[in-house]
Length: 270
Image (cartoon, rainbow, N blue to C red; front, side):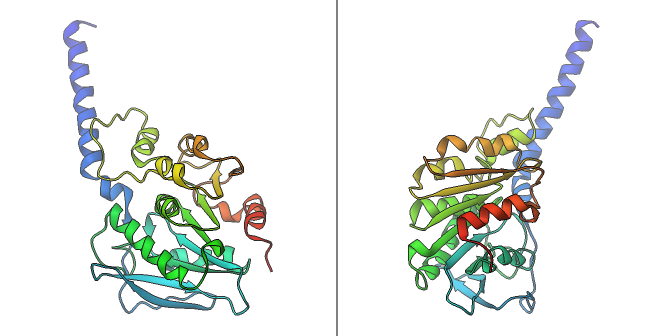
């Protein structure tokens, strides 16, 4: 192969790489967020006692919330922050892991998700999470609140936990940092400029001074184990890191090992 051919191949590969970078920066919002809006008239249906209401943010936007109640005195409240897709109609069913263990549950939809309106941003997600925490504190003392995040919601949860007291922080399928996750998912990718979003679990965890539990599935392809494993150095003595063998990003709750560990954290089911 002569020098001219080599230069031609190099030019093609360079052009393709530049296109990859342009696509990453141009469509980062669409890659990270997959909201599914709901009509204001949508009626949520779950096999549990729950209340739907709105939390009003300082900028006037209404944050849609679901509060799953217990008839008997509850052990506490789980403040649950869901993943990057869909809305509370999908995520509401996960209350069962907590209400079955006699915890009440509060969930919110991020802006642009479900019935929640307003401009979506990382900062707004953190602010609305604080709004939910402040509501929860009116019902429960900090030592009876579990902050729980799943997937993208882990960064929302860990940011909230670094600023507020709680009994425990639980992260299900967390990543280290959104930029680092992009580069792990696409190994040839090198980002010369910061993305518009960070969601840095690796930074948030360093400021959480109460117990932390992390769950990962060994077959997770969306958030590869390499990303989650990079959070280990930020765990304190006594914090917990559980690898659920065979689980993917989407089905940890179906595994007996996951349920057993939740029993240890929250107590056995009734």
